[in-house]
Structure formats: C-alpha cells, structure tokens
Length: 405
Ligand code: MCA
Ligand code: AMP
Image 1: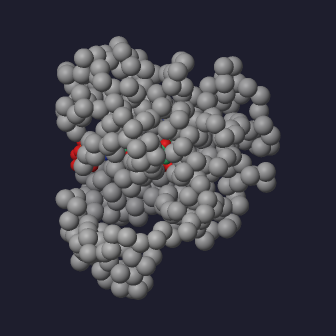
Image 2: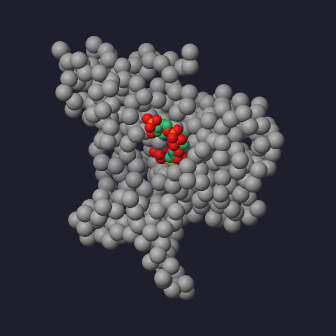
Image 3: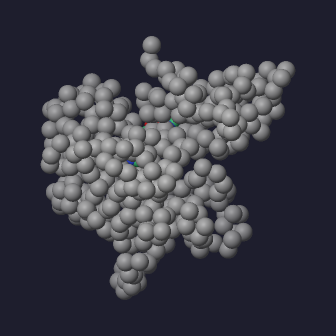
C-alpha cells in the first residue's frame, strides 16, 4: 500500500506500521472529518479521469482462510460493474429508490452490493453508522428498500412497531451473507406482507444467485443463478457435475468471479477448475424448479451475524493457553446470530482453567465477534479413525445450548 486511510483515533498505532513500509497515512473519522477530507477539499475540482479498462484491478478485499494468512481477492472493474448492472436490473432499482444502508462497509455486502447498486441506479442512500433496529424502523417511511444480514431481520421482528403499515413504502427487503431461516422468512411475511428476497454471494465472486423479484421467493433457498453466471454442483470426490437434486460442491463461473488471490498463484490455482469454475466451498443442490439450496459448508467456517469466523484461529489461541490440552471450535444454532461461536475444550490433567480465564486471555487478541459465546469442557474430543476431530458429532451434541428455554 502507498496510502493508508484510518480512523483519527487509530493514527498513533497505524503510523509506525505505515512508516515501516513507506506508506503515507491520512485520517477519516465517522463524522467525515480528517486529513483525507481536508486535503481532498483543497484539490482541483476539474481533472481528467485515469483510463481504466474492464480487466484492470479495482479493489483487493482481504478474506480469511481456513489456515494461514488471509488472502487478497483481486476484483476487477468488470467484476464490480457487471454485478451492479445485473442487480440493478434484477431487483428493479431506479432513481426513485431510497435504500437504508446500515451494514459495515468493510465487506462486500455493504461496500459493493448496497453501494454500487445505489450508485449505478442513481438512487438515494440513507447511510447509517450502525444497525439500530428502532432507528431503522423510524427511517422506513422515507425508504423503498433495505439490505441486511439475517440478524437484521431477526432483531427487527422483535420490534413491536414492525407492521404492514410501517413497511408500506418499502418495495423490497433483501437478505444475504448467511442463511435466512425459513421461520424468519415466514414471520416477516406475516408481520409485513413482504417475502424477503434472499440472495447468495462471496467476496471472491460478488453475487451469484438471487430469488426472483417477480415470482416465488422460496424460503430456505437462494434462488437462481444471476444472468451471466454459470453455476453447477459437483461431486466432492470426483469433481464431476451432479444431477439435479444431488448434494455437492457449488462452483461458479462468470464476469462476477474474481481474477485470483493477490500474490498467491498456488492458492488461486487450487480454487479454480481447469475450465474456469471457482470452487466456492459451499455445499448445495439445485431443486427440480432450478432454485439453488445451500445445505452446508465444505470449509470449516462459522458465520455469526454475517461475520466469518474461522475456527482454526480461535483454536490456536485457546490451545496456546496453559492448562489447555486441546480445543475444537464449532458453530451452533443461535437465535440472534444464526450460528454462535462455541469452544469445546479439553483441560490438561490437573488444570482448573475456567471459561472466564479463556475469555480474559483472548480479550484484546481476537475481535469481539470471534469470542466464544460459550465454552464447554469435556474429557476428550471425538475423533475418527484417521484421528480427525469429528466436529459434526460436537455440533449435534450441543445443538440446543442456545435454544431459548
Ligand atoms: C456483534 N457482536 C457479535 C456480532 N456482532 N457477536 C457475534 N457475531 C456478530 N456478528 C457482539 C458484540 O461484540 C457485543 O459483545 C454483542 O455481540 C452485542 O453487540 P451489538 O452491539 O448488539 O452488536 P451490533 O453492533 O448490533 O452488531 C450485530 C450486527 C453486526 C448488526 C448483526 O454483527 C453486523 O453488522 N453484521 C453484518 C456483517 C456483514 O455485513 N457481513 C457481510 C459480509 P459484548 O456484548 O460482549 O460486548 S460480506 C459476505 O458475507 C458476502 C460476500 C455476502 O454474500 O454478502
Ligand atoms: P465471505 O467469505 O465473507 O465472502 O462470505 C461468503 C460466504 O457467505 C459464502 O461462501 C457462503 O458460505 C455465505 N453466504 C452468503 N450468502 C449466503 C446465503 N444467502 N445463504 C447461506 N450462506 C450464504
């Protein structure tokens, strides 16, 4: 990086890092103030555009992996533009639309899906600093659309004021980033009269599928491949395309799919087939009517409130603690976050380490949303004959721990 833009409060921490790689630092705060804004305001208002072509790099978005360093997904101008064009058309966005934007802008959902659709359509955005359900409800009469992760809809349903009347100016409610439970879809429909439109994407691919704007928005499915996107389901062992209805790996190809990982040619090669299909790591099937269902993940990933959590990162922190022999981190059904990060821990003989000790040790080392919501101690972890921890058995054993009693 040549230039780093950071929160003014973070400047002292960022400056030495920037100096070590010879990058400049400018600041931009939540209030729009900072050296980036002040220097920009002193620039000429007339200048020629830099010529950019469809294949030129537009952004590198970092995404974690199961192991090792996070990977920089290289997205081209055509990746972003083609996806925005398709979504504007599919979701019927126009200049009269007003989108409530309450998503973080350090992920594809808030950064590209919401923002690029609004920009491409010449629509208006109500840009919120954070998701506050009561505030969203108060903005609804001024808006025509909302995009959110399932937790948004779960929390809005807890608001008494969520009624047909409150939602009457809204044209479309869109959900993505994590599975929307069929029961949330149903409850939303009963309360507001709207069927939430669920779609499916990834940092590497932008959006791949969407339920229809007109036609049945089928709960528990992510709809059809977007125009221009090819999607197939393949056998996990042989990589051969499977018949309709069979469960396998979801693979996609199209103008939306990224150019590869920044300076990681081997990783890039490993995630593409020879014919150009990208291996998503999501398991799914295509039903008799062509709707795509995501039924699980081939990758060891937890999605909590729309944020990705890779168990390995947390297991490494916990395993490093005195008193811990080993751990397995799993995602367990959670009423608010969809999946709750849960640690199953084996103590060392004679150790008296408690959940609070683990929480204290990882505080400040891992982002808050990665912290286990519960720590469970066991005598040993279940393993298969190959010695691999059987996380499926753990997920089954603890599947009800977050169920409201
Ligand atoms: C906050 N906390 C969480 C999460 N968020 N814990 C687990 N999972 C989370 N997602 C913790 C806080 O640290 C806090 O801990 C406690 O939960 C309550 O915090 P609260 O203030 O209520 O949380 P919030 O600020 O309301 O955040 C919830 C949220 C947020 C609004 C759902 O997580 C969010 O904006 N998620 C959206 C993520 C997103 O945009 N993902 C898109 C990725 P304590 O009480 O202990 O202090 S892009 C993507 O996936 C692809 C490409 C796609 O298809 O879109
Ligand atoms: P990210 O790695 O942050 O780009 O997140 C992408 C992952 O989010 C996908 O590979 C899926 O596992 C998941 N995802 C996104 N949208 C949906 C959805 N509608 N239903 C289920 N999973 C989803």
